[in-house]
Image 1 (cartoon, one colour):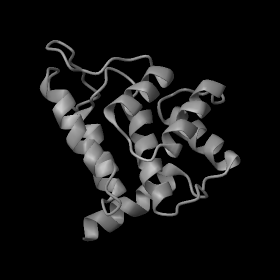
Image 2 (cartoon, rainbow, N blue to C red):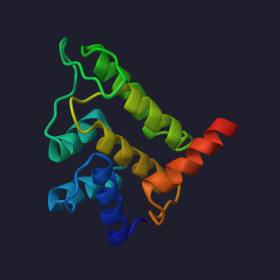
Image 3 (cartoon, one colour):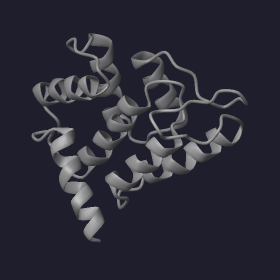
Length: 152
């Protein structure tokens, strides 16, 4: 179980990665707690989370395209919800690698905004199910997971 203190630190770090330098808002913390408590993460659960943290739509229509730096996610359209469902199968698979699922989610970039924060929140859910208590931050563990994933 992730303590309140560790959850606040996680959300603060996740926000700062996006350039959001304020303390986490109560609604953001509530959204993370709700996601962590969900027995199964569904598209609806995730849409609700993203609505709270970013108020951004799913890229499920043609023309809802984004680019992030030099990353060009798939174009928006009806295939995005289907691809998201496949990623969420990984999120809900207790044997799936959180690092790999996170990378697939970020590559898909299913929402117009909030993908980084929601992707890290999904990673946190998967890690919590594996016993992670939130003691080390996302970037710290991400570093070790990336090395481990490369070596495998």
